[in-house]
Length: 127
Image (cartoon, rainbow, N blue to C red; front, side):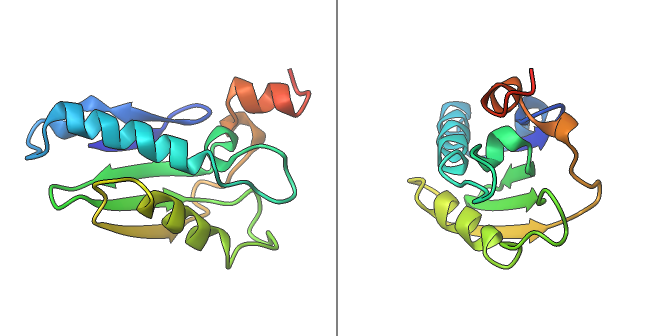
């Protein structure tokens, strides 16, 4: 199962599940609960969670229930650059059924405000 950023927040890609050993309803549950977990992590300088900010670029769940996460920050010099990937990893590990988590930080492509969801734009008075 893959959760991939499109415009704004990440979205699920059902096509990635065609050969998964994990039943679809379980993948759906894991995906929903991972999103809830991501929404508990906030950039301390912005009152919006990292999921709605569009900082989660990609999430893959393999057959062994390992979750691989590609994420970014609002800026390479972000003061929490060393901490936020750990916060995301800890949040993902709270999801029942997740066996392992790896978070990779990337700046390709760089984050920009167009990646934010409408919910984030509304919270930041950008609509």
